[in-house]
Length: 172
Image (cartoon, rainbow, N blue to C red; front, side, top):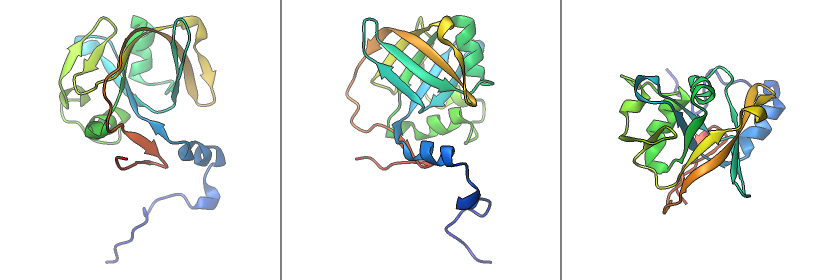
């Protein structure tokens, strides 16, 4: 048996979608979007987002159109957007659906229920947002959503979780 450093099922470079390859090279901090309450809560790891300054400030994100989070966000109209840190890798992977989470991903950390949705207690920076339903539309294979920032807690994020080219970057 030979052990290789490459992934045995990885698509060869020449066959990969060039747009996905470009997107993979745009490094981004990782957020966790959560909405709902109790057994009706949902979450999704999101790195395709931006924050627009203004009065009020806004968050724009690309969400998976069939995600439970998008359904819950459209039902409740609110969500928590939490900036994840290096300590939150397992939480990020579980909510992204790439790591198993026996009992569900909400069992991996402690939570506080806010008026916008559940907030992981491990995060220092988070926003409570309200969906602008008129600004939701399909973009490529994603659903673009805009939300108004109603609450903001900015903490000391000494080791943000950054994703680039399919992996997390080491702490700076």
